[in-house]
Image (cartoon, rainbow, N blue to C red):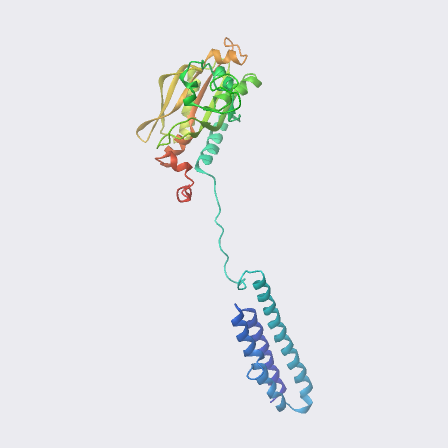
Length: 340
């Protein structure tokens, strides 16, 4: 046999063995590759070694040198594969992963539909010049009731209609008792205590009322409260702001109407309805800030006036996305949440 032919067979064997040993996927596969290429009796390297005797004497040194190089290369590749499997087994991770296989796509999360709605509302009201204010969820009766012109005998202060906190020596509905806020109007009071007009803010956050859960009620929900205080503010300004808001959130074909109502902290007070998809839908209450509320925070009612409104975030979210049961929003069911 010629030296060139012998060397070519060695090169082919080296390439085949290296490729095969890199592709092994388990101990059994590795052992089969060892027997095939390095087997003492019928291994391919042994078969080529037998051909060394047919090489001419002058070419044998070169042929023997190349044979040893190929043998060492295959042996090193085998030891490397064996070492990887040993490490994987020691770590308890099973067979060695094939780096050429496609990876497993990560399942990424996204914002809850209520959070998406809150961010959308902030963006809409921000374009009308309203900044966002926040306040504590655990409140005192002065901010939650007294400053909002809600007297002690008002039904809204009933212990059965609020989450009063049980603390040592505390008595429900008595000044000094803490409770979970029942409305985001408390933020208005805190902002007015610390600021002078003009004021143009919205507050979005959780509020709590001991309602039995059903399709339209939940003991915890979110409100968007709006407040504008300045000189010469009228109901026309309130209606304009709410109409612009409705057109931006629900669409340009939305109409708005006010129905007379009563709230202790606004006078006059109205219920706000939107005509959407051919149906009048109640979304919240609004009105001109009662002079008693302005006086409670040190504003002169003869100089300043303003309006306030409160809209249910879940109600807006449900109407926009066609959700019929508020409990679905808080069920934690990923099959439902992945739709948004």
